Structure formats: C-alpha cells, structure tokens
Image (cartoon, rainbow, N blue to C red):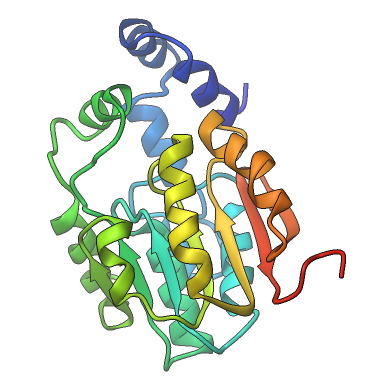
Length: 244
C-alpha cells in the first residue's frame, strides 16, 4: 500500500484504530521519519537539504515543486502550510539559484492546528511538541535560506494583506477539509500573476482536497490543469476562460 493510500485509509478510522494500525505498520513516528528523508540522494542540493527537515513530500513531489518554482523568475512564491520548512527549503533554494530578487512567503500559525485526529497524530509523531516555529526558523538558518523567506505566523485570512499580489507560484498545504482548503485557494488565487501556478498538496489523500479540486478548481475559468505528480496537483492561472 502506498503512503497516500495508507493515510487515506487511516483518515476513515476512529483515533484508537488509527493509533493501533499506525504503530503496527510504522505509519506513525517511524513512517514519518522515513517519508521525511525522501530526497536525501538527490543531485539537487536544495532537495537533498530538504530531506533533513521533517514533513511530508512523497516520491517525485520534490522535483515537481522545484520545476514549478523555477519555470519563471518573475514574482514571489507563497506557501500556505509550512510545518517545519521542507517545501520552503525547496522554494527558497529555487529563488536563490534562479530568481534571487524574489522571496517565499510562508503562511502558517506554526501551532500544529488541525482536526482532532490530525492534532493527535501530530502529538504522536513529534513526542508532544506544541508548535513548530522554532524548528522552522532553525532549519532556515542552518540550511542557508533564512534571508529568502518571509514567515507569516498566522492564518491565511489574517496574512492575506501582507502577501504580494504578483506571485509566480502558490502552494496550498494547510487545512485539508473542504472548507479550509477552499478558503485558502479563494484568498490566494487573486494573488497569482497571469501565467502563474496554483499547486495543492494531498490530492488523493484527503476527501476535502479532492472535493475542492473536482467540484471547484477544475471548473474555475481562471485555471487550467497542468498535471498531477503523486499528490501534488498544479493549475495554470489564465486571464481568459479556458474555452474562450
């Protein structure tokens, strides 16, 4: 069973069952560490660096995010949902190497908010950690991308006025319920420049993300589907409806 299918299956179960199955198959702390270390053997130094940061990116997703981040040098990058900085490391590296005048705006309360089952899972894999702010800053400092990021330690709704209106890429990986993810994309799509990209994480993993993609984003005249790599789905923002 793939990691994505496993996580989806676990989301359908009550917390006690999730805990027992997770411990049995290594999907808790051991599985989390194993997924976090993906990319360690990459020839891309920023992807390799990102493997030292805890978080969830699956096979092929690191390279896809890098590709999206470097296809244009105009406009900043914004991510909604940062955890400890894994994707921020990749995005910041893309800015440093290909667009040094741009920045990564990282929107996340850094307090591990989520559904009750998600919060319980976070507690298990982090040994009771109550927030990720210090880990996020430490990684940025130690791995050499601190000056390329703009942390906005709050929710997307409160951070929206501080996000530039000419972003080349927006990556949404925060709340995964339908209301949460649709709120995030509604706020961020107007901030993306024409020709820029909206990407979402955990498609095929969380029902709320899938519902929003199928019900809303695929029918949004401002967006055109690029492709999906594992659980990352990317759309191009256009000024004209897709069928015009």
